[in-house]
Image 1 (cartoon, rainbow, N blue to C red):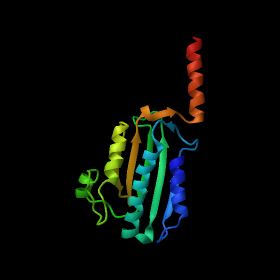
Image 2: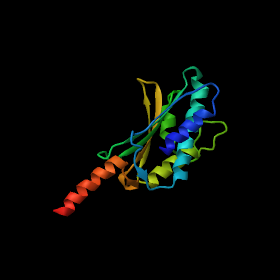
Image 3: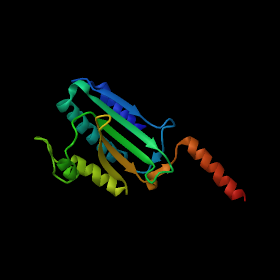
Image 4: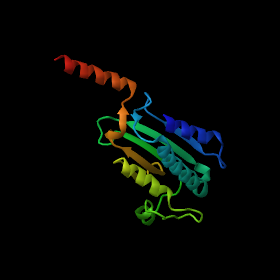
Length: 171
């Protein structure tokens, strides 16, 4: 929920050229996480800034940025945060190196941003990955969070879980 708010704030500032920004999240707001919000915010800021740069330099006429969160307790990585953009597809050569420290394709880049994202996710036993979705012409980065960083499921799921626990205890 906080990440979605961050994306919306980004859109309020206006961009040139205009970028269509969409943010979707689980209807119940998703789970609460056990992590340092400032570090996650840095990761998302990094991905979003890269997305805006990619859009503005490559395809400003069809500029779209998307942010989505999905939560499914049955998955190996139950929480996924996804940042997508309509910039040019990242080449295979760049994909192989983009999470390495000091690797950059930008003249003013430091090569630290995606490395920090990768390091943060690895520290949580999570993953970050990239895929180009040909059908939608979208670059998509996913942050995949493991169950151990989820403190509490969404309120609806939490109450269902407590009901199950109380039945088990009553036996």
